[in-house]
Length: 288
Image (cartoon, rainbow, N blue to C red):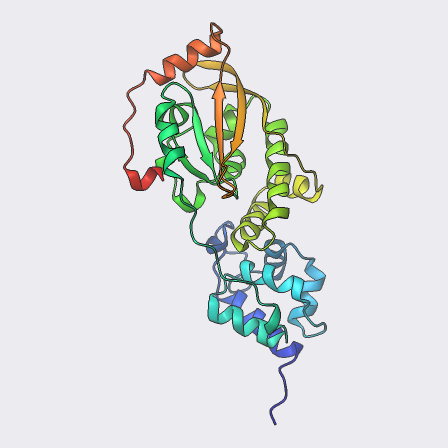
């Protein structure tokens, strides 16, 4: 009878897998001449998985058995495919705890798409369950950025708020807005605890941005559906806009975010200027 695999076999697999990954694949800075190991360092895997370096080191050394709760973060951190994930859970003796498969991409409801197009002079976007930007109108592109130029996998409102210099720079109260965005994402994470893409996204941003890592660890949550945004646009200058968000009634978790200004105000006039721009409309595949 063959003996069941133990912690040493699991540790060997973890070590081999991290050696196969280039830092750039995981959203980390490219390797430089000072890097002494092939692939990822132990501390980088620990950061991506949101676990302590000491705990991960003991896992690799076979000195501790992996709990079911730590396996899913390791799957995401090490970019395991379906076969590798199944193998990891078998090595850990947790085959019954293996999570469900990745969810299909979110699609925008046709009614929401039509509503976006009819809000010609009003910036509006559809946000998905991970705060991905699923769709937008021309006014939103003129206000924020050319969403169609961003790869769909990175077209996320929170990611842009932290990592896109144009979007980040236009927020006059960036820290306030960024902290609220993290709190809203934290609330969403509680509702979508089985979503591997959400956990991977949180791990990547935690490595890439110290502020995000700190604010995520605070466990602050909000469900506010409205507020005021203060922007400094590169063309029309300062804007003060009311931001209102409505949830889709179909239970999909999608939300419509709309930005408006008080009629007759300087911000209202600025939005009219933005809406008068001739914006090249992206194809349907880029807008949905």
